Image 1 (cartoon, rainbow over the protein chains, first blue to last red):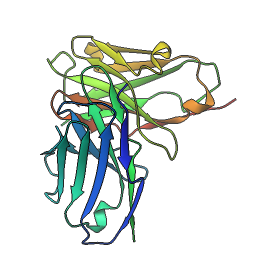
Image 2: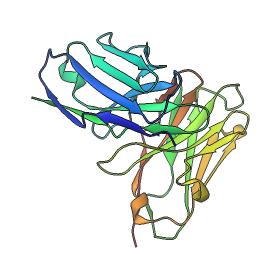
Image 3: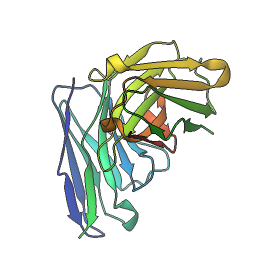
Image 4: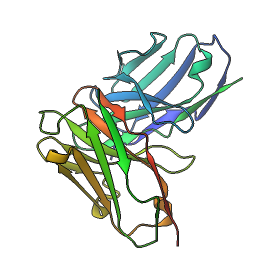
Length: 107
Length: 119
C-alpha cells in the first residue's frame, strides 16, 4: 500500500497568512494527487486534483504543487472561511489512500 | 446536477452484517470512466477509502479490509450497495458515498451516514 503522510498535523495561523501543508507518499506516485477541505459535520470538498488543477469554484488563493513523493497545498492569504481540516489523497487505479489530515486553526 | 445519498441502519450489533445503499442522480454508472466509491471516517479521525466500483463492474477494495467488503451496483435503480461483514465497534464511523471522476477524483460526496456498532 502507498502511505500518505501529512505535515503538520495541526497548524495555527492568522487571517492573511500564507499557509503550506505538505503531503509525502511512501513511493513515487503519478499525477493522481488530490486535496480536500473538510469542515466539522460536513462532507469533504474537492479543492485540487491532478496535483495542481483547481476545482471549479475554488478560490484562486488555493494552489497545489509537487511531484514524485512530495506535494504541497498552499493557501496564499488565509481567509476566515479556510479554517478547516485538509486531506491529501492519492488515487491511482488500484488503491487509494488519504493522508491523516492537517487541521488549520485560528492563531 | 450530481447528488448522492447514503441510507442504511444507524445502529448495528457486533458480528452483524452492515448493508449501506448509495442512491445517486445526475450521472449513469454505465458511462465510461465513471465510478462510485465508499469512504468512511471514525469520529474525530481521518478519512479512509473502503471500496470503488467502476462503470465496467471492475471493483477495488482497501487491502486491509478487502475480505469483509462487497460492492455491487444496480444500474437501473442508480444505486450502489456496500456490504460489510462481521462488524466491530471500531467500524463505528460516518460512511460516505462519492462520485469518482476519471481525472478529478472524488468530486461529489453524499452527506454521509453515521453507523454505530454497539451491543
